[in-house]
Length: 90
Image (cartoon, rainbow, N blue to C red):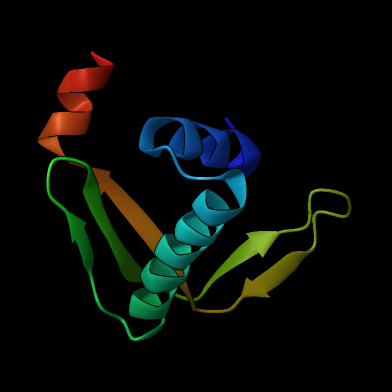
């Protein structure tokens, strides 16, 4: 499922137009992104939790040359599925 499929599913289930459903989906994604930018956790009970995590700096190898290279520290997004989502998938 891609974003357009998600918008179509939301429009169908809520009797909204595709344009309005697209605005709703974009607003939800925007709110999650804004919270994560502030290092806040987003908990959606029954679905899951989005949180940021810090990756330490390290070294890696260039697969073409075998040369070692420095990998800088970075911030990444983690998702942990909630019980409701886990149970629905099984």
